[in-house]
Image 1 (tube, chains in turn yellow, orange):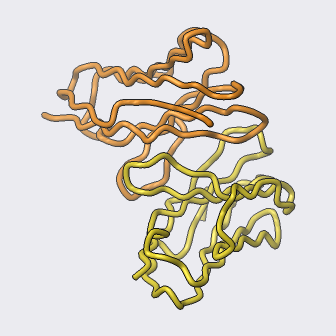
Image 2: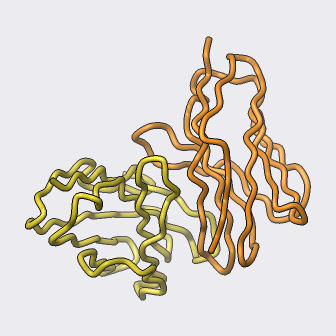
Length: 112
Length: 109
């Protein structure tokens, strides 16, 4: 595997379900990001981790819970989501915080 | 807040040139990025400008005017594979990127 990978690529869940999105980067980077991309809207930054420490929590509802166990892996734990949370969730990484970001292919999430 | 504007859609013919404009009003400025995103795929980095002027990279060029809060991405010799969404993003501080909504470019034969 190369670059930034995300699993699953597609996820359909009910509002009472609990699921997790996984991101893995194979680039030796130290910073990782979660973004939300809704149709026809700009990418919204959700969370930022640098050296496994969270440095940004961009007013995201608590039903989204990030976890960064090491510099290569980033998770987004989901519980009691709403239909308006349906979107493409993109993970990105960068060498350090102010470098170019490399994106994963995203997880297309549908909340029923 | 941050305000980044770019056209929603553009259409051009194969072999032609298309210019995608981006205007921004942000609380700070520490560089402007252009990304390409094909449907269902990851955004991929195209260009970065932090100083005024033109940066050329093959068929793609990007221009920045900081005093005008303006950038454009120029795509030359358009190919069918250039049909994609093009995202303008401004780094307004140490690392935070603020994105425009993207411009969908359709290349027709």
